[in-house]
Image (cartoon, rainbow, N blue to C red):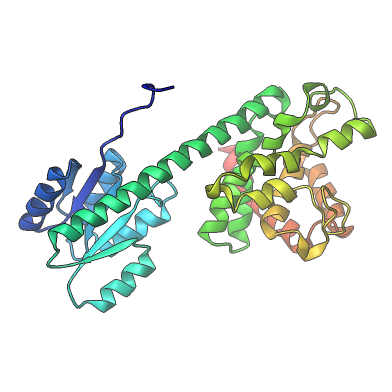
Length: 329
Ligand SMILES: [Fe+2]
Protein backbone atom coordinates (compact mmCIF):
# COMPACT_ATOMS: atom_id res chain seq x y z
CA UNK A 1 0.00 0.00 0.00
CA UNK A 2 2.99 2.31 0.32
CA UNK A 3 2.88 5.18 -2.11
CA UNK A 4 -0.84 4.72 -2.70
CA UNK A 5 -1.99 7.01 0.05
CA UNK A 6 -3.34 10.35 -1.11
CA UNK A 7 -1.17 13.38 -0.43
CA UNK A 8 -2.22 15.35 2.66
CA UNK A 9 -4.91 17.78 1.59
CA UNK A 10 -4.33 21.47 2.18
CA UNK A 11 -6.59 23.08 4.71
CA UNK A 12 -9.05 25.55 3.25
CA UNK A 13 -9.81 28.43 5.60
CA UNK A 14 -12.65 30.92 5.16
CA UNK A 15 -12.01 34.37 6.64
CA UNK A 16 -15.23 36.35 7.02
CA UNK A 17 -14.62 39.91 8.20
CA UNK A 18 -15.79 43.31 7.00
CA UNK A 19 -12.43 44.91 7.78
CA UNK A 20 -9.93 44.98 4.88
CA UNK A 21 -7.05 45.17 7.34
CA UNK A 22 -8.05 42.01 9.25
CA UNK A 23 -8.72 40.03 6.06
CA UNK A 24 -5.32 40.97 4.65
CA UNK A 25 -3.46 40.24 7.90
CA UNK A 26 -5.16 36.86 8.52
CA UNK A 27 -4.73 35.85 4.86
CA UNK A 28 -1.01 36.61 4.96
CA UNK A 29 -0.47 34.60 8.15
CA UNK A 30 -2.45 31.58 7.01
CA UNK A 31 -1.03 31.53 3.47
CA UNK A 32 2.45 31.55 5.05
CA UNK A 33 1.40 28.42 6.96
CA UNK A 34 0.54 26.64 3.70
CA UNK A 35 -3.25 26.93 3.98
CA UNK A 36 -5.61 27.80 1.18
CA UNK A 37 -7.52 30.99 1.98
CA UNK A 38 -10.88 32.32 0.85
CA UNK A 39 -12.43 35.56 2.06
CA UNK A 40 -15.90 37.01 2.53
CA UNK A 41 -16.75 40.59 3.44
CA UNK A 42 -20.13 40.03 5.14
CA UNK A 43 -22.33 37.34 6.70
CA UNK A 44 -24.41 36.50 3.63
CA UNK A 45 -21.30 36.23 1.45
CA UNK A 46 -19.80 33.94 4.12
CA UNK A 47 -22.79 31.56 3.92
CA UNK A 48 -22.61 31.52 0.11
CA UNK A 49 -18.88 30.88 0.25
CA UNK A 50 -19.32 27.93 2.64
CA UNK A 51 -21.87 26.36 0.28
CA UNK A 52 -19.59 26.85 -2.73
CA UNK A 53 -16.09 26.19 -1.34
CA UNK A 54 -16.64 23.79 1.61
CA UNK A 55 -13.95 25.25 3.88
CA UNK A 56 -12.31 23.11 6.59
CA UNK A 57 -12.11 25.91 9.15
CA UNK A 58 -14.17 29.11 9.35
CA UNK A 59 -13.10 32.36 11.03
CA UNK A 60 -16.09 34.64 11.67
CA UNK A 61 -16.04 38.22 12.83
CA UNK A 62 -18.92 38.72 15.28
CA UNK A 63 -19.99 42.13 13.94
CA UNK A 64 -20.51 42.07 10.18
CA UNK A 65 -23.11 43.64 7.89
CA UNK A 66 -25.75 41.33 6.40
CA UNK A 67 -25.84 38.48 8.90
CA UNK A 68 -23.72 38.74 12.07
CA UNK A 69 -21.03 36.16 12.82
CA UNK A 70 -23.31 34.73 15.52
CA UNK A 71 -26.17 34.31 13.05
CA UNK A 72 -23.88 32.71 10.45
CA UNK A 73 -22.48 30.38 13.12
CA UNK A 74 -25.94 29.37 14.30
CA UNK A 75 -27.11 28.62 10.76
CA UNK A 76 -24.05 26.54 9.88
CA UNK A 77 -24.28 24.54 13.12
CA UNK A 78 -27.95 23.78 12.48
CA UNK A 79 -27.31 22.52 8.95
CA UNK A 80 -26.43 18.78 8.93
CA UNK A 81 -24.12 19.31 5.95
CA UNK A 82 -21.96 21.91 7.76
CA UNK A 83 -22.44 21.29 11.48
CA UNK A 84 -19.10 19.50 11.85
CA UNK A 85 -17.02 22.30 10.29
CA UNK A 86 -15.02 24.02 13.08
CA UNK A 87 -15.91 27.68 13.60
CA UNK A 88 -13.77 30.31 15.34
CA UNK A 89 -15.59 33.46 16.42
CA UNK A 90 -13.44 36.57 16.49
CA UNK A 91 -14.73 38.86 19.27
CA UNK A 92 -13.78 42.08 21.01
CA UNK A 93 -11.33 41.67 23.89
CA UNK A 94 -13.78 42.16 26.74
CA UNK A 95 -17.01 41.13 25.17
CA UNK A 96 -18.13 38.35 27.51
CA UNK A 97 -21.74 38.66 26.32
CA UNK A 98 -20.62 37.87 22.74
CA UNK A 99 -18.74 34.83 23.97
CA UNK A 100 -21.77 33.46 25.78
CA UNK A 101 -23.93 34.04 22.72
CA UNK A 102 -21.20 32.42 20.65
CA UNK A 103 -21.23 29.31 22.82
CA UNK A 104 -24.99 29.13 22.44
CA UNK A 105 -24.62 29.46 18.67
CA UNK A 106 -22.27 26.44 18.71
CA UNK A 107 -18.88 28.12 18.09
CA UNK A 108 -15.92 25.78 18.62
CA UNK A 109 -13.29 28.39 19.55
CA UNK A 110 -12.89 32.10 20.22
CA UNK A 111 -10.18 34.58 19.36
CA UNK A 112 -10.04 38.04 20.93
CA UNK A 113 -9.01 41.12 18.99
CA UNK A 114 -6.24 42.13 18.68
CA UNK A 115 -5.43 38.60 17.56
CA UNK A 116 -1.91 37.37 18.22
CA UNK A 117 -0.47 35.85 15.03
CA UNK A 118 0.90 32.79 16.81
CA UNK A 119 -2.43 32.13 18.51
CA UNK A 120 -4.30 32.41 15.21
CA UNK A 121 -1.96 29.98 13.50
CA UNK A 122 -2.06 27.48 16.39
CA UNK A 123 -5.89 27.54 16.57
CA UNK A 124 -6.32 27.04 12.85
CA UNK A 125 -3.74 24.25 12.81
CA UNK A 126 -5.37 22.31 15.64
CA UNK A 127 -8.90 22.76 14.25
CA UNK A 128 -7.70 21.66 10.81
CA UNK A 129 -6.43 18.44 12.38
CA UNK A 130 -9.82 17.86 14.01
CA UNK A 131 -11.60 18.52 10.71
CA UNK A 132 -9.42 16.05 8.81
CA UNK A 133 -10.22 13.39 11.42
CA UNK A 134 -13.92 14.17 11.12
CA UNK A 135 -13.65 13.85 7.33
CA UNK A 136 -12.20 10.37 7.72
CA UNK A 137 -15.04 9.38 10.02
CA UNK A 138 -17.53 10.89 7.66
CA UNK A 139 -16.26 8.89 4.73
CA UNK A 140 -16.47 5.72 6.84
CA UNK A 141 -20.05 6.66 7.63
CA UNK A 142 -20.73 7.37 3.96
CA UNK A 143 -19.41 3.87 3.18
CA UNK A 144 -21.93 2.50 5.67
CA UNK A 145 -24.85 4.24 4.04
CA UNK A 146 -23.69 2.82 0.71
CA UNK A 147 -23.58 -0.64 2.29
CA UNK A 148 -27.11 -0.21 3.65
CA UNK A 149 -28.39 0.81 0.21
CA UNK A 150 -26.59 -2.18 -1.35
CA UNK A 151 -28.44 -4.49 1.03
CA UNK A 152 -31.70 -2.81 0.13
CA UNK A 153 -30.88 -3.29 -3.56
CA UNK A 154 -30.59 -7.08 -3.04
CA UNK A 155 -34.34 -7.10 -2.59
CA UNK A 156 -36.19 -5.22 -5.36
CA UNK A 157 -39.38 -5.12 -3.29
CA UNK A 158 -37.80 -3.03 -0.54
CA UNK A 159 -36.42 -0.40 -2.92
CA UNK A 160 -36.63 3.07 -1.43
CA UNK A 161 -37.37 1.62 2.02
CA UNK A 162 -34.34 3.23 3.71
CA UNK A 163 -34.97 6.69 2.37
CA UNK A 164 -38.70 6.58 3.13
CA UNK A 165 -37.93 5.33 6.61
CA UNK A 166 -35.37 8.06 7.26
CA UNK A 167 -37.85 10.75 6.24
CA UNK A 168 -40.81 9.26 8.10
CA UNK A 169 -38.74 8.76 11.29
CA UNK A 170 -37.57 12.38 11.22
CA UNK A 171 -41.16 13.57 10.66
CA UNK A 172 -42.40 11.57 13.65
CA UNK A 173 -39.44 12.69 15.79
CA UNK A 174 -40.20 16.29 14.95
CA UNK A 175 -43.90 15.79 15.77
CA UNK A 176 -42.84 14.44 19.18
CA UNK A 177 -40.75 17.58 19.77
CA UNK A 178 -37.29 16.00 19.60
CA UNK A 179 -34.14 18.11 19.18
CA UNK A 180 -31.72 18.28 16.26
CA UNK A 181 -29.32 15.62 17.61
CA UNK A 182 -32.13 13.09 17.89
CA UNK A 183 -33.53 14.00 14.46
CA UNK A 184 -30.07 13.55 12.97
CA UNK A 185 -29.78 10.12 14.62
CA UNK A 186 -33.23 9.16 13.31
CA UNK A 187 -32.22 10.14 9.79
CA UNK A 188 -29.06 8.03 9.95
CA UNK A 189 -30.97 5.25 11.71
CA UNK A 190 -33.51 5.17 8.89
CA UNK A 191 -30.72 4.30 6.49
CA UNK A 192 -28.71 2.02 8.75
CA UNK A 193 -31.29 0.15 10.86
CA UNK A 194 -31.03 -3.04 8.77
CA UNK A 195 -27.32 -2.83 7.91
CA UNK A 196 -26.87 -6.16 9.78
CA UNK A 197 -28.85 -7.92 7.03
CA UNK A 198 -25.52 -8.10 5.25
CA UNK A 199 -25.03 -11.18 7.50
CA UNK A 200 -28.33 -12.82 6.50
CA UNK A 201 -28.17 -15.20 3.50
CA UNK A 202 -30.13 -14.35 0.33
CA UNK A 203 -32.02 -17.64 0.65
CA UNK A 204 -33.62 -16.28 3.83
CA UNK A 205 -33.75 -12.58 2.99
CA UNK A 206 -35.44 -13.17 -0.38
CA UNK A 207 -37.43 -16.31 0.45
CA UNK A 208 -40.77 -16.20 -1.39
CA UNK A 209 -42.73 -17.49 1.61
CA UNK A 210 -42.91 -17.34 5.40
CA UNK A 211 -39.70 -18.24 7.22
CA UNK A 212 -39.30 -21.48 9.18
CA UNK A 213 -38.58 -21.00 12.92
CA UNK A 214 -34.92 -21.79 12.26
CA UNK A 215 -34.68 -19.27 9.42
CA UNK A 216 -36.43 -16.68 11.56
CA UNK A 217 -33.80 -17.22 14.27
CA UNK A 218 -31.14 -16.32 11.70
CA UNK A 219 -33.09 -13.29 10.52
CA UNK A 220 -33.39 -12.15 14.14
CA UNK A 221 -29.62 -11.81 14.37
CA UNK A 222 -29.53 -8.77 12.06
CA UNK A 223 -29.83 -6.12 14.81
CA UNK A 224 -26.85 -7.48 16.72
CA UNK A 225 -24.77 -7.93 13.57
CA UNK A 226 -25.59 -4.34 12.59
CA UNK A 227 -24.68 -3.02 16.03
CA UNK A 228 -21.34 -4.81 15.94
CA UNK A 229 -20.63 -3.28 12.52
CA UNK A 230 -21.43 0.23 13.78
CA UNK A 231 -19.55 -0.14 17.07
CA UNK A 232 -16.11 1.09 15.90
CA UNK A 233 -17.55 4.34 14.55
CA UNK A 234 -17.77 7.02 17.21
CA UNK A 235 -19.95 9.14 14.93
CA UNK A 236 -22.65 6.43 15.00
CA UNK A 237 -22.95 6.16 18.79
CA UNK A 238 -26.42 7.70 18.85
CA UNK A 239 -27.54 5.53 15.94
CA UNK A 240 -26.50 2.21 17.49
CA UNK A 241 -29.51 1.87 19.85
CA UNK A 242 -31.76 2.22 16.78
CA UNK A 243 -29.86 -0.46 14.87
CA UNK A 244 -29.81 -2.82 17.87
CA UNK A 245 -33.30 -2.27 19.27
CA UNK A 246 -35.71 -1.39 16.42
CA UNK A 247 -37.44 -4.80 16.71
CA UNK A 248 -38.01 -4.56 20.48
CA UNK A 249 -41.66 -4.10 21.52
CA UNK A 250 -43.00 -2.48 24.68
CA UNK A 251 -44.74 -5.68 25.88
CA UNK A 252 -41.48 -7.64 25.79
CA UNK A 253 -42.43 -9.65 22.68
CA UNK A 254 -39.67 -8.20 20.48
CA UNK A 255 -36.07 -9.18 19.84
CA UNK A 256 -33.13 -9.53 20.42
CA UNK A 257 -33.56 -8.97 24.19
CA UNK A 258 -37.30 -8.85 24.88
CA UNK A 259 -36.99 -5.42 26.54
CA UNK A 260 -40.11 -3.88 28.07
CA UNK A 261 -41.65 -0.39 28.26
CA UNK A 262 -39.16 2.39 28.91
CA UNK A 263 -36.26 -0.02 28.45
CA UNK A 264 -36.80 0.43 24.72
CA UNK A 265 -35.15 3.76 23.79
CA UNK A 266 -37.49 6.33 22.25
CA UNK A 267 -35.55 6.56 18.96
CA UNK A 268 -35.75 2.77 18.53
CA UNK A 269 -39.51 2.89 19.25
CA UNK A 270 -39.93 5.54 16.56
CA UNK A 271 -38.03 3.59 13.92
CA UNK A 272 -39.93 0.44 15.00
CA UNK A 273 -43.27 2.08 14.22
CA UNK A 274 -42.30 3.58 10.86
CA UNK A 275 -40.50 0.35 9.87
CA UNK A 276 -43.62 -1.77 10.44
CA UNK A 277 -45.81 0.66 8.51
CA UNK A 278 -43.42 0.80 5.56
CA UNK A 279 -43.00 -2.99 5.54
CA UNK A 280 -46.79 -3.46 5.43
CA UNK A 281 -47.44 -0.88 2.72
CA UNK A 282 -44.70 -2.19 0.43
CA UNK A 283 -44.81 -5.75 -0.91
CA UNK A 284 -42.79 -8.66 0.44
CA UNK A 285 -41.62 -11.78 -1.44
CA UNK A 286 -44.56 -13.73 0.07
CA UNK A 287 -47.36 -11.16 0.01
CA UNK A 288 -48.51 -8.01 -1.75
CA UNK A 289 -48.61 -4.50 -0.33
CA UNK A 290 -51.40 -3.65 2.11
CA UNK A 291 -53.48 -0.52 1.43
CA UNK A 292 -52.69 2.33 3.88
CA UNK A 293 -55.94 1.96 5.86
CA UNK A 294 -55.24 -1.73 6.57
CA UNK A 295 -51.67 -0.89 7.68
CA UNK A 296 -53.10 1.85 9.90
CA UNK A 297 -55.54 -0.61 11.48
CA UNK A 298 -52.67 -3.00 12.13
CA UNK A 299 -50.60 -0.30 13.91
CA UNK A 300 -53.59 0.76 16.02
CA UNK A 301 -54.14 -2.88 17.03
CA UNK A 302 -50.46 -3.26 17.90
CA UNK A 303 -50.66 -0.17 20.13
CA UNK A 304 -53.87 -1.49 21.77
CA UNK A 305 -52.05 -4.77 22.47
CA UNK A 306 -49.28 -2.80 24.23
CA UNK A 307 -46.54 -3.36 21.68
CA UNK A 308 -46.21 0.30 20.63
CA UNK A 309 -46.96 3.46 22.63
CA UNK A 310 -50.44 4.65 21.79
CA UNK A 311 -49.46 8.35 21.67
CA UNK A 312 -46.55 7.63 19.31
CA UNK A 313 -48.75 5.69 16.91
CA UNK A 314 -51.33 8.48 17.00
CA UNK A 315 -48.62 11.08 16.32
CA UNK A 316 -47.33 8.94 13.44
CA UNK A 317 -50.79 8.64 11.88
CA UNK A 318 -51.14 12.43 12.17
CA UNK A 319 -47.86 12.87 10.25
CA UNK A 320 -49.25 10.58 7.52
CA UNK A 321 -52.38 12.69 7.29
CA UNK A 322 -50.21 15.78 6.86
CA UNK A 323 -47.79 14.10 4.44
CA UNK A 324 -50.46 12.46 2.26
CA UNK A 325 -51.59 15.57 0.33
CA UNK A 326 -47.96 16.22 -0.62
CA UNK A 327 -47.89 12.84 -2.39
CA UNK A 328 -50.80 13.87 -4.60
CA UNK A 329 -49.06 16.94 -6.06
FE1 LIG B 1 -34.86 -4.75 10.93
